[in-house]
Image (cartoon, rainbow, N blue to C red; front, side, top):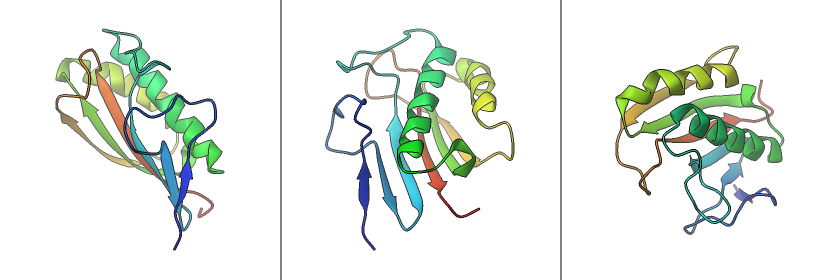
Length: 129
């Protein structure tokens, strides 16, 4: 088995030693994704819905760069800093998964930078429908 890193060219350089995604044997693993701008600045401070939309758009672009779609996502790991944002996050999340829903978990925790409200990591099975 070989692993192929996925780093869409329009993405900023990661802030740590990782790839935006990695593909192996038809499975795409998308790293924990945050609402960060090109200079690693927090985008949409205080707006969980806007941060979630940014995160899911970034995940979508990563999966598409590997030849898949959001319909290929089978599992999401969701981290949020405050349960008060759960409804806002779910509202946006539902837009990106209108059909069969991927499995997932959601936990409350601290994130890597103050002001970040949500982080999502995904797994997609590309080309295996």
